[in-house]
Length: 411
Image (tube, rainbow, N blue to C red; front, side, top):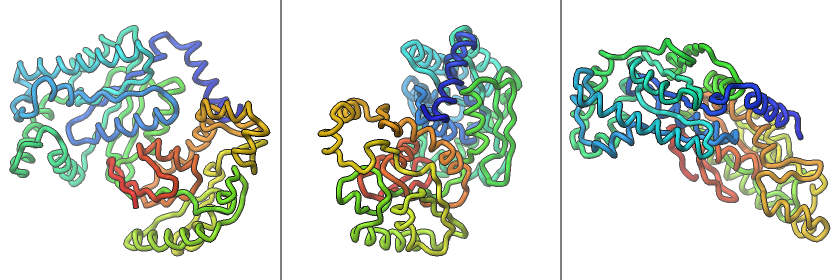
C-alpha cells in the first residue's frame, strides 16, 4: 500500500477504534445569514468528501420548506415574531435532520445540513436530535463586504426557486432584503460546541478561519480544505494531453511523444487558451512530468508552466507498455480483476485509481487555493479524478472549462 493511502487508512481506522461511537458519523451544520455562501460551501465540501471516498450527502432545508409550504412565501414568513412561520421552519429543519439520521443508519457517513440555523434554539434542537448518534460540527459563514453581499443577493434572487414566479426582479431583491433584515434581528453567532467560522473569505482579501474544539482525522481534513478554500469565481480549464504515439499503438502508460494528431491538438489548444485568457492578468499552466503533457503545453506562450509529479498517469506496474489484449492473453487473472473493479484494482507493482485520487489531493487543495485561472493538462485517470471532484463528465478527448458556482461548459 502506498504511504499516502496507508496514512489515510490508518488515521481513519484509529478514529473508528478509539473515538466514541457517535464520532464515527459526522453532521456538518451550516450557519449564517442568507447570501453568505452557505450552499456553495456545502456543495464544495460535499464534492471534496465524496472525492476522498466518504459517503456524503447534502441536505438543503430550503428544499424541504418549498416542498411542504410552496415557493410563494413572502418575507413575512421569515419574521422572528411570526410564530407560525418559526414553527414551520423548525419543522422542516427537523424533517431534514430525521432524513439525514435515517440515511446514516443505512450507511451514510457525513451529512451536511444546509440552512441558516441562525438561532441557538434551532441549533440546540439539532444537537439534541443527534445526541448519541453522530458528532456535530457547525460551519458558520460570515461576510461583511457589502459589495459581495449585494452581488450575492442579486444572484440569489436570480437563481432561487423562491423567486421563479417573480416577474419584477427588483421587487424580488427588495423582498429578499426584507427577509434578510428579519434574520439579522434574531441572528445569534455560534459560540457553542465544535465550530469553524469562515470570516470574510469571499472577497479575496485574506479573511479569517476560527476553529473551536475540532479533533479527529476527518474534521481535520475539513479544516485543511476550508483553510485553502475561497468563493472567488475563476476559470479552470481541464484537458487530456494530445494523442500520443502509445495511444495510437494502444499501449498502457509509457512516456512517448505526441502523434501528428496530438501535435495538431496542442496548437489548437494553445490558440484557444491564448484567446480565452487574453484579458487575464495572470494564469498558470499545470502539466504532469511526462513528455506528452509537456509537449501539449509547449505551444502555449505567455504563462508560467508548472510540472506536478502528482498529475502523472496511473502507474501500470508490470503492465506498463503492454496493450490490453496482451494483458488479457498473458495475465488473464489481472485482466479479469481489473474488469470487475477498476476503481480498486491495483496493477502489480503499480497503482489503483484510489491511489491516484490520494496522491492528487495536494493538487486539488492547491487548485482550490488559486484565485487566478489555471489550465490543467494531464492524463485520463488524473483528469477524470478532477472531473469527479468538479461534478463534470469528460469525453475521451475534450477541453472542459469550469468557472465556479457550478458553471461549466465543453469547449
